[in-house]
Length: 138
Length: 138
Length: 138
Length: 138
Image (cartoon, rainbow over all chains, first blue to last red; front, side, top):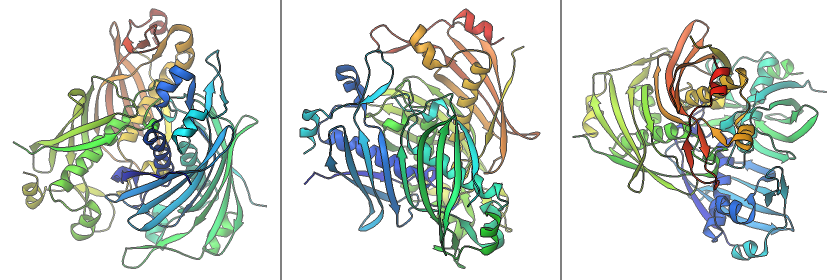
């Protein structure tokens, strides 16, 4: 069973749309922040450092699926519960559950790849997930 | 067969992240813009007017699923091809295909509900999709 | 002397641009959040409540001036020190100082008006700043 | 007299806040896009290319000053009229005027520096504005 790391977000006025509720792409933005927070909490260095030391640029998403059950508005504090559901060779799948107190507002998965920039500093390509990074996240 | 409406986006520097590619929640932002553009192109008034005239606040998303095949960067022009795949009683499903020239960068679906604000001006609730609006979109 | 309220922000990957530093409009976004945080910390209800109870929609900006001295990047925690430098009849001037530890990254002012929506629910107009709200912020 | 380049923006639903008007940091985002559009229209290559060929990372802002006269909402098309008011050795000052038809919604200035990344690929530093780039923008 993977560990779960919680990322807290205070919803801002500017995160909300003319209907007065969170503009939904912001939930994806917060899930992305929660993914990075997950790796940092597990002891993985920031991508900035890994870019220099090992060429690892980050973990872009390949696929997302999200269900929105309840809306949220500014002034509310949300908790994003993030874990890794599955590790594959070059990709992994996150699970994010966004809660306000005991209410689940939305939940979703992200499939992400570990990518490196090739030697010429050009194109990004998927890489085998380093075993030491995977071990940190258990 | 539903009509398809194309929404064009010029990717900006500020839409891209430290890896130099579009920060993925922006694709969802553009799909949202393309949804609104679809209804406007079909002759549906802006939600702002429908809020006043008929209490219709907009079409919040209930569910999204998106696959990202290729990245994009600033200076590139993208085309979002948007249609309605299915109409149900209170919800409908959009299909969005994001292209750069002939390349498909990402594609996804959105299930959205038509929502109204109740009489007290308070909570949002799903409503039967008005037949006249549905007719405009055929 | 006005009170100063501090708002903390953890810079996210998606807040940064291809140069690897915070995309500057995000600093304005955080100053806006810090303005709202200031009023909430002073005991002023959220605009959402004041819209219903007193027609007060919020405090849109009329003028901003900001100097950027140092950049920031993701993983860093910033503190925004916010105060009210001057109260006028319908407007006030915020001062925001954005710090990372002891370093000042940027600082700026915002002139904002208190606005209400007129009876017809239409246009926004500036209003005399309510004395009770001003008193809360001293 | 500097040339003026016009950048068009269609305001989106997600650009607006619970008051139904453009969330003001978006105006700064659009001015930034208009700055880049200005250089591209003058024939300056994208920063991405200049980073590789000449180490020029971009033109981060040092100072902004903006006055907001009228609000805007989604569905409206804005024009940002951008020019360079003054060239100095390492910095220049943009003037942006945001119009909707004949109405001026906001206007402002940006002081920006040309910056390069030093040899070690580390810190950003201001550089003398290349004469060939300045010549293109006249």
